[in-house]
Image (tube, rainbow, N blue to C red; front, side):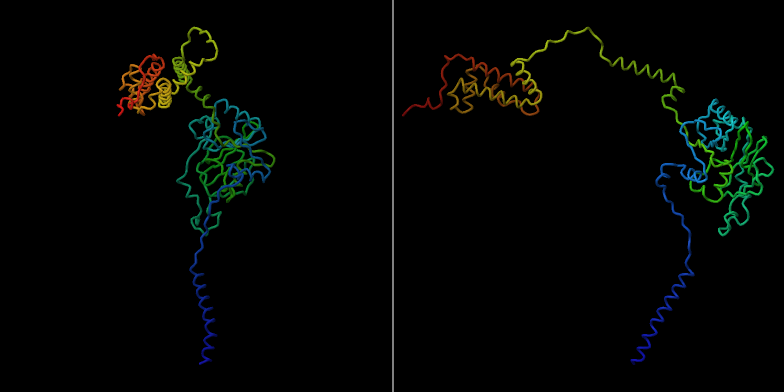
Length: 413
């Protein structure tokens, strides 16, 4: 029995290892791996510069990239790239660009600039025609391009350099996975160009001492896709990037000043609006009258100070002013009718009403006050009654009969 148990103890670890190996083998043959691209947002300088990738790539090949906010022309040795279809191209501006090219500059145009309705003169000046061949693009894709296992070059559209031109070097081929959607035609003698099975995609010809390059695309690739496939090499060839020669990119729209734009397009409306505003301000202004003599300066008297304080309290806190008036009347009663202090309030105020020839009911209502929430006029009426009573009490003749208490009228036993 002991020998059998020892044998099982030796076999169990071996069986466990075999089960783990079988499980690992099963997982390995049924596991599928897929590449997942995760977007990482730009950071640092790339967050502030939308052309960061293009700028860094040009810097590594010895070329500086300038993106001026104002449409200033670069030196003739530079390459000027026009990509924004909405920048304002006036007749004088277009003529200045042409004169700059004839002086030795190199301008690169994308067909998105040429096809805008605002710039049809560019097509007429340089005799460029564009055609869309989106339906024929799939015919250019080689066989096996839809297979994921195919080589990267076989999944892209090949562009070959036209032989026999002044700036051509035979044997160069570029593969662009995002095909150029437009075919270009021009009767001008070419110095360089790229074409595929459908026709020309990039054209370059001489213009005076300078050159003009037209690319059948919507704009340059400035993000991380510039470093994929042959994108960077294609941009380098189309722009004719050379170390030491700067590249100027007009990619953002210059917005004119709002008031300048309104004055240029709606001057009559602005003038009429200004007149309406001026008339409204004139009507709202106070009318001018004769000069008024300056009021003499001086200190206010005690009476004016008391009146001003009373008027202020009547507006802000009439209950406090009423309490002060009642207190003043009590002081007058104590001074003029000292014997009334021993009477009850009903008999006291009845005696005050008799001595001052006042209506007792009206005097009691004035002592109670109109109550909270009453108007200033109601408070003023009560205050006036109390003040008249106080003054009459102070000026009452002393020959009047003295005030006696109710105990004096009780017969003695």
